[in-house]
Image (tube, rainbow, N blue to C red):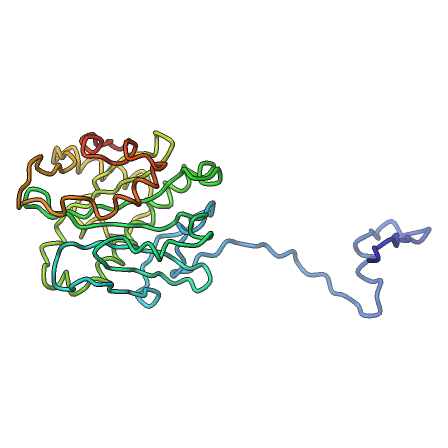
Length: 283
């Protein structure tokens, strides 16, 4: 292959007011008009999901767009509460969200090198603990490869900012369930952040679903609101009965395998019942 080896030849004399850039602009057959330099500004569209990027900056409020959501019902009764799990993923090519509603995590949705690189999925499950329904949402912050570790703080911020959109997608996609059981809007939302960094490896209560799915800017104000909710209600992470009963279901987490993998493949590091007894209050 050839290479560019020509050198720029300058005239021996240039007028004082002329400079190199003006000379280059007049140099061809056609005159090139100088224009003002263009400033590139980041643009955020309402259908984009900034959380589905390893290290992207988030600008503007998170907005849910129903036209971008594809819902799959996989072997689950739309009218029955349990068992019920959500798997939400995003495509950077089409900018569309895919929500699978099934009896367990839809693992086929999480295959491929791209998904394992990004780890931007959100999985959730409904649980009945001592007769009360609650929604348990899981996010992978870091661990698995160094890129996620480098962006752990940013990923935590982005997940917090975008989770209201995720919850809104759950409510919209599972519309028939909420029409049949409107009381589920008052169910508490527990968010589990999985990370190999202790600072981000924690569980937070986001309050009732109808409030947690409201738009948020992911700022400290949102954290203070969650903190206030916990303090006022003196909540502990819900614990199932130790013995076999009819008031707790399902007996085994629907996303146990996902959570175990997210925590490094060791069940001891996962969100076991003992670990869940300690709720991290937000700063």
